Every structure is written in C-alpha cells, then in structure tokens.
Image (cartoon, rainbow, N blue to C red; front, side):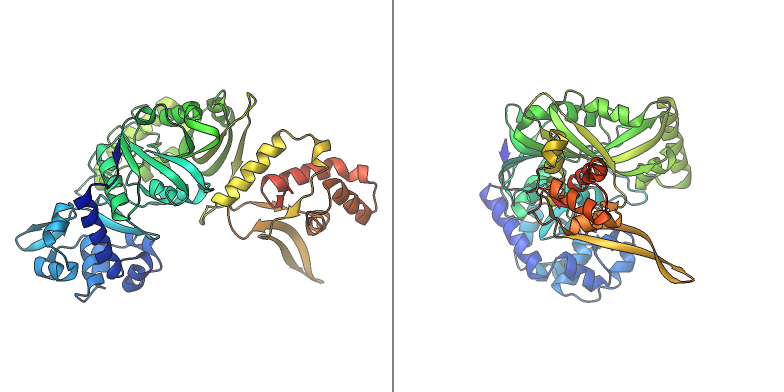
Length: 490
C-alpha cells in the first residue's frame, strides 16, 4: 500500500505547483470567463485553436490555460516567467517537457470544483487513446459524485479510481480513503492528484477487491469499466470479464467489504436481451447479494447509438469508424441485445437475510448534487419495506422544505382550466408525482404533528366521505410520497 504523495520533495513540489496555479486564477469559473464560455464543459465542444485565439496575452492565466488545458506549445522563457519556480521541478513532476526551446504539457490539468486534476489528454484525430489511458473529469464521474451519499464516515473505498476524483471528494467527509485501480498509471495519477491538492489518500494497485482483502468500509464508490462492448482495448472502458461481468461481480461480492449498514454506489450499463424480461435479469443479479438495492435507470439507447458513443474518437475517420461499428453490431446481434440502459446503483448492507430491490426510471437527467436526497430516499424505502399499513398510520410525516407544487393550466373559452398538478423538489433527484387536490391539501397539513391516520381522516372529512373510503388508496399515496422524500418521517 502506497500512501499518496507523502514523499517529501515530490509533495513539496506538487504543493508549489498548486500555489502557482491558484495564484494565476487557474479555476473553472475564471477560465470559463476568460474564454467567454458558460462553463468548463464547453471546452470539449469547441476546438482548441478556437479557444486559444481568445487568449491574447502572456498573463499567467492565459499562458497556463494555453499550455495545460488547450495543449498549445509555449516558448520556454514565457513559461519560466510564469512559474516563479525552478522549471526543472515542473519537469521532474512530469507535467511538462521541452523541445527546441518550446514547452509542451505532458498531461492535461483540469479544474473540478476546487480540485485540480492531472489526467491524460483526450483523443484527437490520428492520435487514439493508449490502452492504459486515464480519464480526467467527465460527465460520468460528475454523475457518480452527484449521487454519492456523504454523511461523516470512517472509511471509503474508491474502486477503479482513475485520476482519483471520487477519492479526493470522499476525503472531505471520511477519516480514511483508499483508492484502488487495476491500471498502474491510474494509481500513480491519483497519488499525484492527492499530493497536488494536499489530501491524504492511500492509493493501491490491483484487480477489484484483491488489494483491500480483509478490510471493511462504510462506503464503496465505483465507476468501473462498465461499457458493454466486444473490445478489451481500453482499461477505463472495457472489462476482461465482458459485458455486465464486472458490474455483476461488484454487486454480488461487495457486501463482504462493507461495515454494518455500509453503502456501495456504482454506475453500470445493463443489456436488454431479446425475449428476456429486463427487470428480471436485473433483479437476478442482486439475488443473495446481502444488500438492499435501489437502481435508477438514467438513460436507454439502441445498440447502434450506444456503440457510436463509445467507439474511440481517435478512430473516427469514416471507413475506420464504419468497420468498428460493424464489429460492435455483430457482437450485439450475437448476444441478442436490443437496447442498453445506463443505471446508477445504490446498495446498503442488510442487517438480516431478507433484502429488497427497487428499480425506478428517472424522468430527467440528474444535473445537481443529490446525495442527501438519495440518502433520505433510501432510508425511507428501508423503513417502508418492513412497515405494515397499521404501523404506517402511526407515523407523523412532515413536508420536505424543498417541495414545490406546480399547476398546469390550459386556455379555454371560459378562461384557464387546470390540467395537472404535480409535486417536485427544488434540488436533489428530478423526481415528481402527479397529485389531486385532496393529496395537495394532505401535503399542506403534513407538519410532523398529525399522524397519517389523522391526515387521512382530515382528507376524508374535506371530501365528505368516510375515512375507510380513502384509507386504502391514501396509504399507498403516503408510501410513494415518503419513498421519494416529499414527506419525511418523524
């Protein structure tokens, strides 16, 4: 086990490099403002030369963005003036190299929130990714970060760490963090990024659970090579286990690494197989895993669309891409795969032999941190799983403070007529539920002082019907509102 970045000189040089970057304003908001774009995601939509033309000075920020973010070579004397440190230290860290008086960055340096992350350069036409390529910040990593539950924890494992994003974020709310990866270059990258950001993370190399055998964690997060493909050419994308193999392995074995009530959260792809119930295939993978599980289907794509997203950008000359696409499509035809879903999985080690799994479709993309909401929903679902209706009637729920009621109206000859009323949350997961006026009033009266039984009696009285007439359906509505955390149990 190698403690990340604790070697004296390397850590000091990394800390000095961070000081230079921060001093120059090398942050996402400042860079986006300087380039005239809305946010850092625009960097992957616009060509580097287009962005580089907007940097017309030798200010420290302009020089560092050209060099470390856009991949433009810069004259050595200009770079030396910006670094305010021995140039050899940056070369010793492997950040830059010099040829014929011009400096080139060996890696990309990407701001991610208040973190600075070194990673490999993305693919360019004619320059495909190397097999052990290490990704930098990307939408998939951001999604996993957004759904991760973040109570104060004793220990976290980032399984398949890549450049270390999840591990560094976990260090903010955990006493001990371990980052593991099969790719030795990823382990080295994560260790460097830990040192660069002044964070202690133990970075270890090995396959899946092998490097942490015998250890237990309060949380395991994983963004594994989950892509369902016929290739094994990229470590970050393809697993030697094939198809859903690595996801199934994590799901079936992770309980052995979790402390009592410990969580595991991972992203996965899951195939729809012709003639086979998709939900049944998914539920079968969780049978006997020792955890309760909540699976969110985030997206679903047809095989050709899916393949087009994942075939290497560096191979996208028309003939080469067409050949690769044919290869992938033959694989899907052999496996009878008709579609592929992208899923976010949250599991918690169960305290007894009986476990549950729930599968929900997200109505919209997750675009903001939702870990607290995921935790509230999971707690509620665990509560509801073992709660009979009679016990539910005794709960005194309160309305979540971020709940909003939205009315949709349509124009008629007589004015505006109501069409639909829905409840949504201002943050967290993009969940929503349609409600009728009776349920809307029930929510309004849910203040933590009235029991569900009293709320249903109140709703029945307002409707002018006996409580028994609304109770069966009302209990079901309350369960759904609690499960999505519109209502919070007291």
